[in-house]
Amino acid sequence: MTARVGIVTFPGSLDDRDAARALRIAGAEPVSLWHGEADLRGVDAVVLPGGFSYGDYLRCGAIARFAPLMAELVPAARSGDLPVLGICNGFQILCESHLLPGALTRNSSRHFICRDQLLRVEAADTVWTGDYSPGQEILIPLKSGEGSYVAAPETLDELERSGRVVARYIDAAPNGAQREIAGVANEHGNVVGLMPHPEHAVEALTGPSVDGLGFFTSLLAHLAEGSPVGAAAAAG
Image (cartoon, rainbow, N blue to C red; front, side):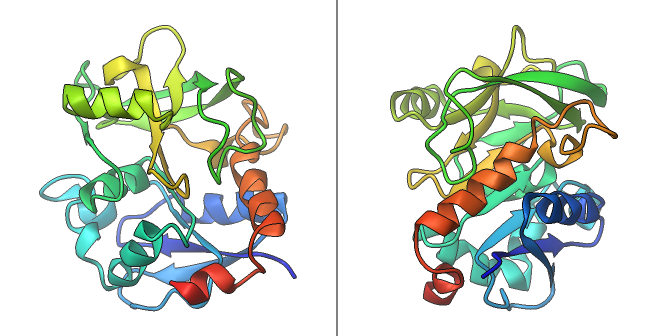
């Protein structure tokens, strides 16, 4: 049975269709989820896409955490049952929802960054990174104005100690992120937040590489090897 993966659309989302396309290419069935409905529709996993949810009023992701759908998503994700990938604005929403530690703040340059970015995969044992090798370098787009990851020193130390830093910017972080962190995972490895955009690097035609496809094929491999399709969402 084909895995069904939900993509949440908030007012201001703009990469939801790109995420759906990436999932189709990987072999999944994308399922549209509306922010205002507290119904996960029995999906096996969820992607929180990039964009400007609720216009980024207050703080990026600060209003989205209170969306009716998040009332269903948060406990399912926190239990370890529901895989969730937050990309860019989705990463911000995960931090605001306290599913991931830390916060995303204004880029140190105070400028919006849009560029192809080299990353090094640090943790290849999460639900979303199993198809990568530790230390593998990948090239995917980065486009954000508030993408600088920050956290208390003790939180950063714990993320390092527990192997929950998913990816780092190679050389220096272009946005000033502490310890060059581009993505982190929760303690179960089912929730991952990533500031760059893997959904924009899934086809050679559109480039800059196909390096982002592994995030989505990793999920499908995990679902195929783990619980039957549909069981995770039902348990949530």
